[in-house]
Structures are given as C-alpha cells and as structure tokens.
Amino acid sequence: MKYNNPVVKGFYPDPSVIKVYDTYYMVCSSFQYFPGVPLFESKDLLNWKQIGHCLTRKSQIQLETVNSSGGVFAPTIRHNDGRFYMVTTNDTTHQNFYVWTDDIYGEWSEPIYVDQGGIDPDLYFEDGKTLFMSNGVDDQGVGGIVQCEIEIETGRKLTPGRTIWNGTGGRYLESPHLYKMNGYYYLLAAEGGTEYGHMVTYARGTSSSGPFEAYAHNPVLTNRNLGGYELQGVGHGDLVEDDLGNWWLFHLGFRQIGRWATYHHLGREVFLTPITFDEDGWFTAGHEGTTLTSFETDRIPDTVIQQDKKSYTFENTDWGLDWCYLRHPNTEHYQLESDKLTLTGTDVTLDVPASPTFIGLRQKDFDATISVDVSLTNGEAGVTIYMDENHHYEVAIRQEQDGYKVIERLNIGDIESIEHEVNLGNKQHATLVIRSSHERYSFLLQAEGEEILLGTAQTRYLSSEVAGGFTGVLIGLYATGENAVAEFTNFKCDYH
Image (tube, rainbow, N blue to C red; front, top):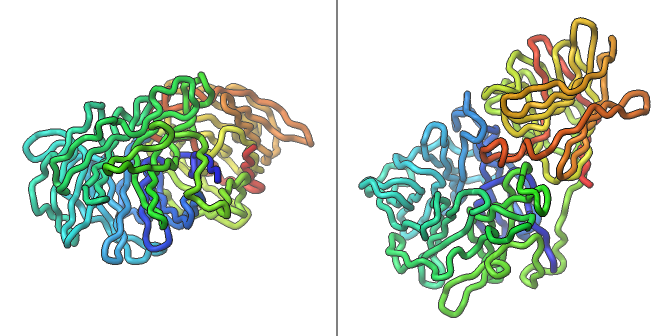
C-alpha cells in the first residue's frame, strides 16, 4: 500500500511511540500550551486518535509566565510491568520529571523529579533496573548523552550521571532513546539542531551503559541535502516494532511553504519512515537515508485506509482533546457547549506571556477556509492566527466609542498595525473569515451575502525562520477587555 506523510499533521513535535499488546501509543511536546503532552493511540501506525493528555492539572506542570517555546519539551512514553510512564522536561524551570498511570485512559500521577539536568529524557527498564538518560553534562562536567540509574518509585539517583556517548560531531546532540534488539543495545539520538540540519544518528554496544560504536554511515536519516525539497528538518525519532517484526521510525519533520521558499509555520509534525536491518544488525532508514512524503510498502495491509479529516467544527471536535489553552486558563471565562463557545475577556492580551482568554486548534494544512459567527458585548473578540506573543494575525470585532468595527490586525515582532477596518455601527455581530494558502492568509468579513476583503498577510512572518522558537500556528478564538463577552457559533475549518 501507499501511505502519506505526515501521519499526524500540525504542531505535534518530538513524537515518542510504544506498542503495548495490539495498540500503539504516542506522545508529543506541548511547550506553553495546556493541557500538556497530547496522548494518541493507533492500531495500524497510520491513523492516530487522540485519547487524552498526560499533564491535565496545574499541580503537574508550572506554566505561569512561561514564554512561547518554553515549558514542556520532548516527552518519552514507556511501559513496564503494566504501568505507563511519561518522562519529560520543564525547560523553563530546568526540571526533568516523570508521571505514571496504570490506566492509559485515566489520570496521570503527580510529577516525580530526577536530579539530573539536560533535556529530552528517556527511561529504559531491564532486569528490575531503571536507567534514566538525557542530553546535557554529567557529574564530572563532560557533555553528551548522560545516563544514571534511578529508583523508579522516587526518582532518586542510585548512580552518578555519566556521559555514555558524544554523538558524531553534529551540534545539539539530543533525543536519546535506548533499545535492546538482536543482542545489541542501540542508542538513537538526534543532532544538527531541529531545523534544516536536523538528522537521526545512532550507535550500538553490548552493554546498556556502553561503550557504543557509531553506525559507520551516520546520519541514518536526514533530508538536509535535499535542496528545493518541501519536507525538511527531519530528526528526533523513536523506534517501534510492529506485529510482523518490522521496525519503524517515528520522527519529526516540517513542510516548507514552497519548494524554494524556505519557511515553515505549521510546526514540526509526525512522520513515519520504515527501518531495514542488514545481516550484521545495522539498520538503514527510508529512501537512501531520507524521508519521503509518501512510501509504497507491503508492511501495512492494503485493508488499512489512511484517514485525513478535512473539516473541523464545534460539533465534531472535543473541547478537552482537540483544543488547547495558552498556559493555565481561568476556566470560569470559558463556557464550552456542543455547538457554541462563550468567552469572557480580561485585560490580558495575546501580546504577553500570560493566559489570555484563548482556545485554539492546531493548523493542520496550508490550504484552508476558517469561518465563525461572533457576537460581542464590549471589548474585542475574533480569530487569531497565532504563532507566539510577538507574531500573530487577527480578524476581529471590537467596540469603540462610535460603535463596533471589524478589524484586520498584524503583529510582527515589534510592529503592530491595524491594516483595515469596517464600521458596523451598532451591529454587534459579524461573520469572520480567514482563507489560508501556502504563502498568504486573507482576512474577510461576510455581510449581507457579500464578502469584504480586509487584506492579506504573508505566512512567512509567522514561520519559525522569522519568529524563532519550536511551536507552530494555532487557529485561536479569543476575547479581550475587562467587560468583554463574546459568543462564537457556526465555527468551521475546512481544508482543501
């Protein structure tokens, strides 16, 4: 059969995957968004259903005043003796911790902290022992992939942190994962930075603590030399074995806005690449060490149909799964109904690292039409195309002294500009529309059966190349102003 990449679209970076019995489970990074660490399941590797989050309580993760791209970095999910573990980093507080659950559909524990630095932590279980790994500096001051043994009940270190591998020389050695396969211990990692030089590398040894011999043809996977190729930034992966003994690499990557336009704004997404072992136990990945936008394979039965949801509404999404907040929300300001959303604004705006009244969906493809009816009492409310507090676009209805207006506003770095406005008089209701393409967003007002184009803006100014950071664009509904009350109905996001 033929399957298409990415297998999970939109801002879901740093995938980690396990298989327990007949089901695969995956977690991804969430940074400043809450709930934290989206959790998915799949039966066939291609179709992923979100079933929850690992961090659902304020007590589990500190997100107050966390800047965009701070907060929750690079989770790893593992399973041992009937218990699931998710280990991650709060990069803002520089704390590595894990949570656990015996019910994958239920709540996760309070955090258990590990006194070892670095990011991108991993857990490896064998013979009653738990090894903890992260990238960073060991107890002797040596940088690399650092490993120690911990007591899994408490997180207490039982051995000093010791660097076990220094990588292949690429910058930002990160994302360590340890596996035992074919009588060897394989240490998977990423190097090159999570951008155009990103790559997957690995080494193997006969002991879980090394020494490790690097694969002679590293990197095993990278798209860094594919100039003019839409799919870039391939790296940060996790290996998983299917029922037939085939191995796969789940990893992140991103789609450029065009073949020659080196910008990406949808965020880092989840890609699936086949792995093949040779007779000596070394493995290769993908097509000559690269990831493709589609693969032909007989490893997945032809009976598996890869789904691609094209329309998102209030009615066919789940407020607790599909939608997310900026940092910890004041839930009193959100009234979530099956076909309607009511937001109560505050004086907190989208421009500061706090928690404005905002709820958002990840943008999943370039070409889309987003529309919603908004009724407003006081303040401002509308739709934001949100990258971070310094880079976002809005089409909104706002109250001013002479009545209500619909505005198009662009925030790019230190520049904030209302590009266009339309007077509504005393009318407090508007239908707002955003049309998205690879390279532009168009902002419109629907009135009396006609569409009024307010203006357009380039997607590149919301890209990681311009804004920096590690997140991607969210389609957000928001309200601001102390006395603002906004009702949203007939929301629809259609991908073309």
